[in-house]
Length: 627
Image 1 (cartoon, rainbow, N blue to C red):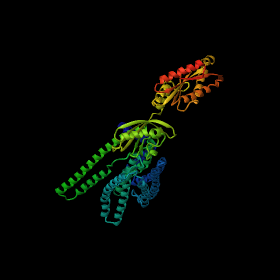
Image 2: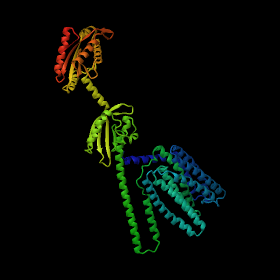
Image 3: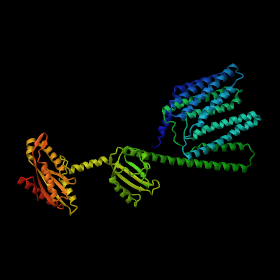
């Protein structure tokens, strides 16, 4: 999440350099360059031999550029702009090979007439080959997606290009004008224009958000282009001098570097597939370097002029002020970059925490529409986070739980910044209702949030476990009926209406002990389960059937009058008139029912009266009795 340690980054660079030095292709190029340099630099042979050796070495280098360029292009198959750049580089190598081969043949045929200066045919092919990757660089996408980034790019590019134009005009155009011939002036203009275009292509890639080459490949290619430009500039001056052999070696070096660039690209990408991924830079030093260079050129030009002390003071002051402004600006940029890096690190930590959090975080606007949803929404509920944006935030909450949440929000409206929690059921993508603990915080007053923050924690499994524990504590494990404790709670709840009458029935099986003694406890347990089913089948939906213990059962009839209780008791007695079939045995058991009716405010009295009535029925041999 933070920056890599300096030691680790330094180790990566050392490892990369070792990989480049150990590459057999680069070693072969370096060895071939060393051999040809040893052949042409010493003054043991004639200038004609030096020039022929130089010309013969160039076409193979061009072929190497073609092969390595095609390999680098295939390596970037899915990345169309990058692939296109290396195809253009391979095409340029093929065009160079044609021009260099023509020049080599002419030089071998007439060494005296075709020296180190390129002929017309070679110049045409060189210009054509140079234009091919240059066009690809000009068309390469910048990767700048915002208006501010594009505006910053064009301002910086304009600064650099203005400084470049000043230098080119001074050193090239003025020289052509001084030559006095129209041809020299036109040549200088063409050369200056092509140089400006080339500089803009390089500046575009340096200032833009994307580039088609790794740092090593860019360094080799840029160095090769710079040395080639210097070599072409000094060639007319050194062709007839005793430095010709050194000039030829200087002209060979850029060809080797440019041919090695696609191989460096291939090695860099294989070592680090994300090598072309750039972190966006907040600022570039290139425009400020251009400003400094222009000031130096101005000072250098004015040293040859007759200026007095006042003029020099003004010039020095202007340059000093400009320099101080540049330094201040760079210092501010560096501080901003540091602060942004810290902010990015904090944001990355936050995103990592949210990304892998199992809690759902959402933000609702004033209309309770979703403006943000964390990735956990998809992990936990199965809904894509992006798909939730703009939808009503509470649409997934169970209707029976929604009112409690709305009441909670109404309370929070007067307590901005405070949080409140409630439990509710939420529907997941499969349609299942899951329990969540939802914490709501109203942060409309916070400009950084401007909405309601909702944090939802899945408690479904814990809730089910707690419900199961409560169920086990309040129900008979054999018959799944309420136990004595829950039965008393139901009576207490029903007694809240003091005016409502009620009735309690106690049921005891006749002959249960004999069943246990004769057939075993497993048959007795099955008989109790069957009894519970018959009791449930003969009561009203609001009535409660409970097992108090052993073969003793109880029924609570809220709002049960004497006629209602008698009717229920008769149905139960009739239900046990038929044998109960258990485990293949037809068990002829009966049920004694005791009935007690009256206010539910004193359940102990009702249970005592029902118990007395039940035992009275047993003694009298009847199926039911009442008190």
